Length: 89
Image (tube, rainbow, N blue to C red; front, side, top):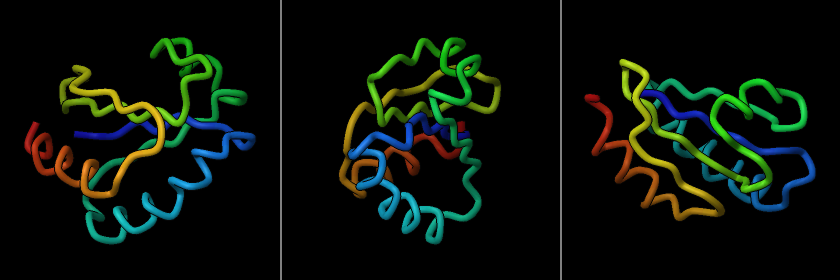
């Protein structure tokens, strides 16, 4: 599983979530996370139909299937529970 993180420099919610993601990545270092800025990575944002609904986190299976989308600020526990649920997929 990997997680696609979509955000932007001007997004207050994205800034709030940076600390939480930093904690998560230090605890779960084996997770593949790809970061995209919707203003810079427009092609990737278009591919996943991401507009201004950020922060947005897309959980993707090893075979490329979208498993789950989370929009907006999230609790650390919510993200960790999803990581545990999808980590083998």
